[in-house]
Image 1 (cartoon, rainbow, N blue to C red):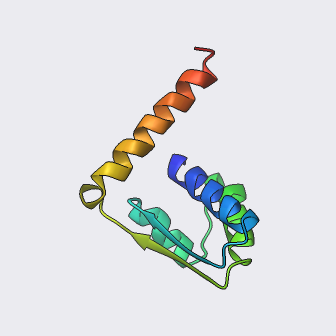
Image 2 (cartoon, rainbow, N blue to C red):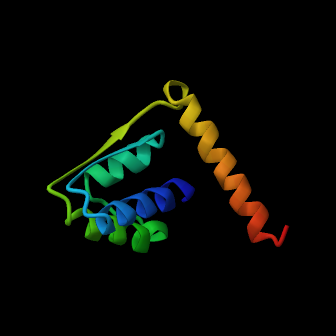
Image 3 (cartoon, one colour):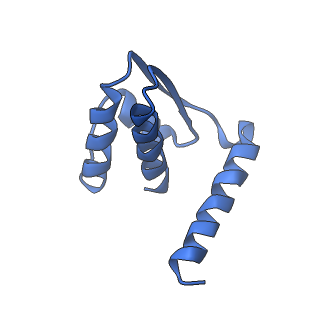
Length: 92
């Protein structure tokens, strides 16, 4: 769920910034497959709808899988950001 939300935020930001070409890389193989197939699952319906809707504003958009071990720095950064958001969300 967190990965799908992060991708939705990135796609929405890129669309609002008039980006014309976008490459999304994720360590969630199942999510990447779902996005490539433009599939849907009930739990992610609204999130995926937003991703697909905003993706139509790009000339080119691609989703690709990157194994977590090949992307240690980004994984660490994402976990730190999530931890920080959770801290603020709990009134800390």
